Length: 517
Image 1 (cartoon, rainbow, N blue to C red):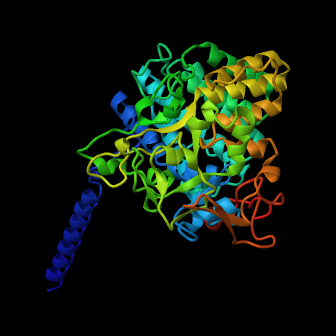
Image 2: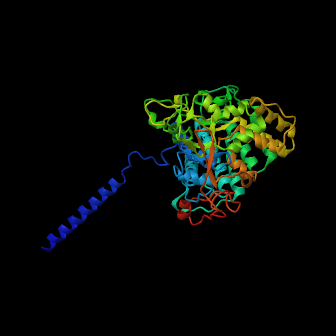
Image 3: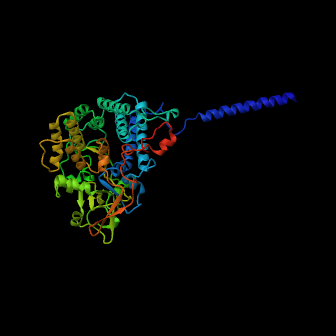
């Protein structure tokens, strides 16, 4: 009997052992659809796939990127259908936002997503074939691009130069000097790799990748943000003298329209396709937001009628144009319209309606037209998202030359922009001339906010927040007070930097919040 029991026990142990071995083998089965770093990123095709993911992730930044930067500038009112239509936009525009702002959180997070994907490429894609080398260079460019905004708007974002292990997630604030050095190294290495694409000439539209000249423009911008004037002069002059880009010479009011995508002036834009078979791949809430307030207007022109009327020009911006160009200035009329201009083209505010967050001025340069909508999709637009154009590079270089002691060269660059704007040349230019020219030329292109911060003029220029205008069908402006006392407006005690998002503070106790938040 004992022998029989012993045999049963031995047999049971053997059976369990075999079962465990079998289970272990099942657990070792390779997971389908998942690639490891050890097996992926080894071929040219995989390198292309990896860098495509970076482009795709970056393209998703544009909505938050645009409204964060333009709502915080001194050029626009929030707008929309009325008070409370978009509270998050209102809070940005009126400087009542805090660290829980979706725009602050989303922009910060998405830049780090771009950095993560770029780090994956730099860490795991071999530095062997031309395609692999180019992927690595493009990843460094995008990583630097993300950090330029993170540093200039948040000051001390964590420096993440590799894919983090779980034990490394809670990174402390970065040192600004080391962060800028990191940006410079990334861009310098990307340029020196000689793998980034270069256009054959200014009108070359054969490729839509980032270019060597874009990297040079970003490096020059990084130098200027640090006030390294001689270094900025050197790299920006080289970029300009390459003759790979020129100011667009067609009708100025088409410069941001779908009909002029990737023109001679465009340095980087995100491409969107007029694909009627997949229209919802190109839904653009940005487009819905920035178009005129269609439900309050009778529109007979080619302006899209179903958009929502956010981000409307302030009268102070219009007046700055008029003071420099006159009321009929070519660039002014190509950039924005007053209400008489709108009436003259057959559009009007409906009787009894009003436009909220509006002083009677309508953006025209980035107007939304019906023909850019893709058939079959809600707010599916095929107009590209623009990130940088050559006029910005000329004006960055002009600033560097003024600060670096070569004002004649600065005048040359400023006058190229003014000539295209049909304005007389200036014999000499000052820093104030450059600041004004940049405000007018690039208004609504997500540049002004960071310029105001680094020029230390934001506290003097940002006046919105206390009251909001509305424009009536009769052509008059009324004002409504929404914030009293110290509840709104730019505060020198806190607004020189954005707050680190609350989600970051909650997850990362090693982050120190910026002053005043």
